[in-house]
Length: 178
Image (cartoon, rainbow, N blue to C red):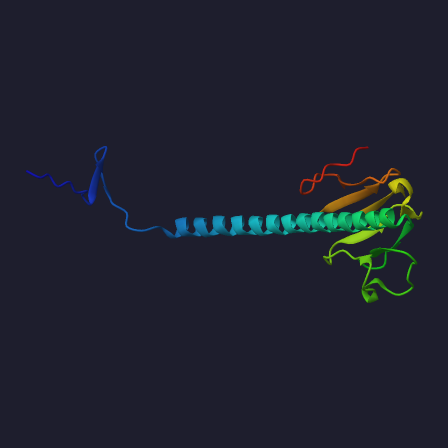
């Protein structure tokens, strides 16, 4: 003998009879829409900030690769490579003689930040460069920044090039030590 259990349309809870609900109320629907909207706005802001941090870190790593290439070239040819920087607009960095034209008109042998919100600056107005003799360098700092933060590229006198971030760690780049 088979027993067939069915839920009745009426439930008895502590003596009161309550009708079984079929659907959702308008208040519940509005609450779900409001929560989904809040989560969407929060997610969009977080995504935008994440993209800015990643753009800054990517620009810093590209600058590190560019300078490492210049350092290896100076070491290989046993020559001096001095760097220049132009700070108009986004800015650009290169080696050799400093050009008089704008960064946007230059093509080869320069580093321009790949994203429009990233700018490049130098902390002091002194010559920074690499010397082929013993693979050394003239020490200095180059700063990349955007609304997400600042990343400093440090060149030491022994020729070491490293990255550190100002204020907060960005995309695995450690904080600068004071």
